[in-house]
Length: 243
Length: 243
Image 1 (cartoon, rainbow over the protein chains, first blue to last red):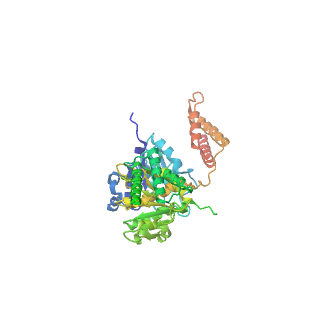
Image 2: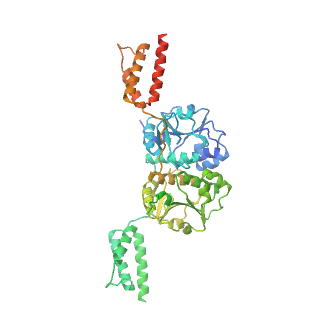
Image 3: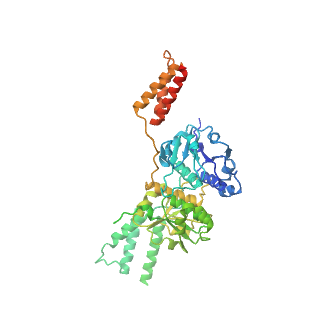
């Protein structure tokens, strides 16, 4: 049985979106985090040029988006639907923070498709829509103004799931080679010698100058190329001082 | 000495933004996560009606945004600048994932303002701009398409910092009162009795029916009001069966 990456089992459902730009921006947000299954429930307008413009490089996700008349259709085949809403309801599921819910959403996605359901830009998810969801998830936000843009909420949800899955790593810095302790010792000795020669370091009254220098150098986490550059500079100072 | 919430010490710096809509959307993203200090470096256009429209309820953040000619001005007073870029450079800082970097950013914000620096929509941060930053941070993303919209990147960064700071909690579900074990036992007994009366449960061949029911009821985590509703329903079935 082939193993299925749980992120391929995450479906983003936008219920009654008003603005096509948000549909496109949501497609872009999904693709940046590796998700591709987008469903639209009764959008006010079908995706148009504005949607395509905001989808940018995620035209494939936008074009493959399926439109349903009712939420039940968009949820067909899912094993779990999580409704995104920060509003508490009289009759409600327990409200869970996105970060707490993410591991469970990924675990359930091993069993089958899991839907993340987002409501209309202005009114959010209705009680009826939330009733189709087995879980209510909130993105913790400023109580004085917690209104995330729809695509921004999709971006945060997809980011959280991709992070919880450990899906993507960040690149390595190129050409980085850390200096060895010998490199650093040689640099510090060179630096000390140059400071003596300049008169800035008085061997009779050294104070804590060398201690400060060592601490700074240790904290900087120098690269080999940086040690080379610094020693070149010190050599140039020395040469100039000797003229 | 009053304690300073580290999130008040986070400054969002947009370097050379091209689209005023993104400036407004970034202001909105910031405010939803409790941040307010926005700086613009040489924006192509000053914030306009499009910026205000996308700022939505964050007009205050947008209006208070300060414009600088050069990045150094926008960083004045900061103790740390973190440049957001996923691109590795020949001469670069070690690249750190946002989630790993967040605790350190918050810790440094205890010492003074910390800037999160975002580059132009198309070209990102230049090497020169990144040179003013002490740290390079990346939002882990799809290697096949990792291009987050500018405001979406600001939203994710602000979400991650607010989450790492544990700044906001999600609300409690209203009116929720969990059923006690006595409530649940009485419900299960009632249910069993109704199923016997209907003939669905045959005492001579009970199979695992009650075991299944108990497991389902336990997993559902019932509320008291739900127990009451279910027992009312069972009573109605019983009454109807007896007619």
